[in-house]
Length: 239
Image (cartoon, rainbow, N blue to C red):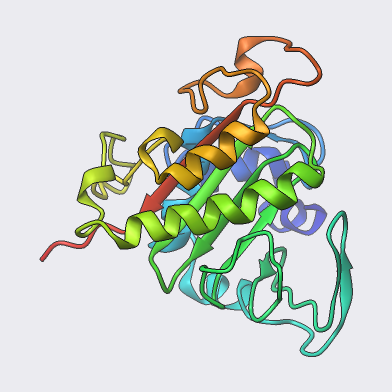
């Protein structure tokens, strides 16, 4: 962040807003650390996922470099999950590659990349399947995620693979600043029963599994309640 500030001659928060958030039509803001201070909604993650599938703001060369293994063969530990040998990473993005028992599930391709956080959220992008999946929760990352996330990811991929060009899950997110067509959006209730079960198992209160507003917008909740929001983004191909 310091290097970007120096080169751009503005604060990192201002640069991020002007160069990324505004062009993508995101309402997210940076509050505090560049490593953990972004605050936004599920729609913001959807827009970011669409950008990483079909870049217009991010240079292709930069995305290629960010999703290329930077230290081939280097092992390491992913906090909260365990050790992988190798533990392939790009520039700020974890690369799935051939890692066994991965949090992105067993169906995502080896080209899948993404990130998850201690707040119980994740975004992964599979350029081979032309699919991105994101979830926001109000529950800190823990063992529940290591069970629910892989099953959810596999269930979404299996469900979408059975649908004709994904048309039954598209809906009306407005085009972004580049005028790209609607990204596909769906909530977990539109997925396979296995996906619904994965969300329900994590949700001890039988509230909605997906909402338009981010979890923090609804105010404080009981400590043992897990509310999950999910979107998946699909490339729209005109034929």
